[in-house]
Image 1 (cartoon, rainbow, N blue to C red):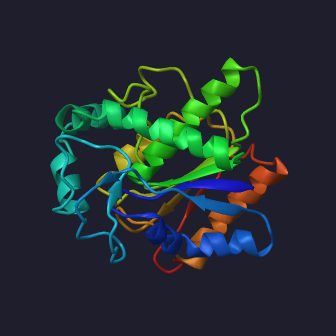
Image 2: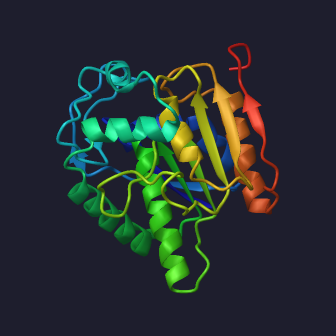
Length: 262
């Protein structure tokens, strides 16, 4: 299987390679998977509280007019966490109303860029995204599933893996695709890795809610808005990939990692 990989906001592909090292090693050793790492298009200010020190370039998938992460993810999470949220989708709408202006054209540019990569370097059999990169990956996934349906062909992409990710954009980049106002779903197996302690976990849940139940795996950890890179957790993600490759993903497991497990 060949995976198309989308790094998180204000980082880059080399950073993401390090973060998912144990996943890559697990799947590459026996030839289960290979990985193609994309570089986002838009420059950004460094974020001071990302998991590892991340040398330049600092890049983003979407170019927001009113969203500055230079004060840190924790600062943004505190600003974007709303009292009285009735659902994850309600939280996303409120955040979009505050921060989502000016995204449209950059979302279209991102899609065109990735479509060209898929045409030149594909086929790809899975996507992996982190945080904002998860939103980009899910947006691309909806796009590719739609193109496959339009042409009456199966979509080569068989699964999606989302680390502490945010929901997909609509095609025009003017909003997020949410389960309570759009009946479209990601209709392939997905794996969602996040923490209930993440101040932005409602974003991950909104993404989770637009994915079909069959074949969905949820892996919870005890960190915040981070990607755990322990061998044990990444082995569980690798097991999801192997189930997809073997076609045995009908179960919907919940896997919980505590601090002792890693």
